[in-house]
Image 1 (tube, rainbow, N blue to C red):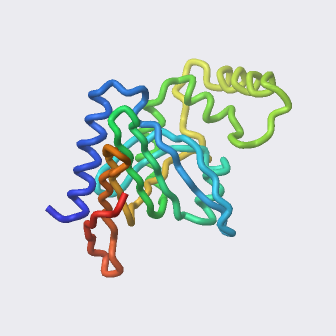
Image 2: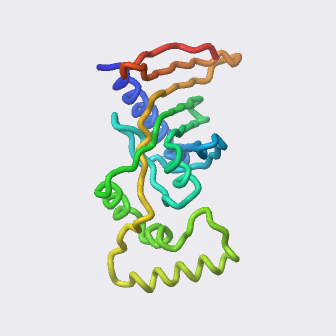
Length: 195
């Protein structure tokens, strides 16, 4: 098994542990992105898939994060499963998923979430809550009795890692920190870090 495959397998094992522990929404992760000038922002997104190709999440491409990823694909995820005393950091570049992958995931979402993807102009100002409610009603009428297609501005991103770091809580703040990082020749190395 390659060093990279080991890191992905470790993440998948830890994620399964978080699910088995019954943690509230173990897919919730903090996503950090930045504008081209380096001004950062962070928010919570839901992790919808992990394999050796990367870490997948979905969003409105017109949102702040979507616009940031268009001009600066560098991004980071921070996943904290506090009751397990575990955290994972992932850094890399975000790339759009295929239309087929985005369509398949969108079709699996609850209908109201599909409606919301059309109705919400994510990250844009609202005059009041009623404005959003009116748009939701309009979209419900528009697609009444039919499947809702994926909006062209809504899709997914796959964060392709250049670094994955595992943190486990230790007594006296003597934590375990292990990092997997890609080298310039595209090989991966594993190292321990001081807490």
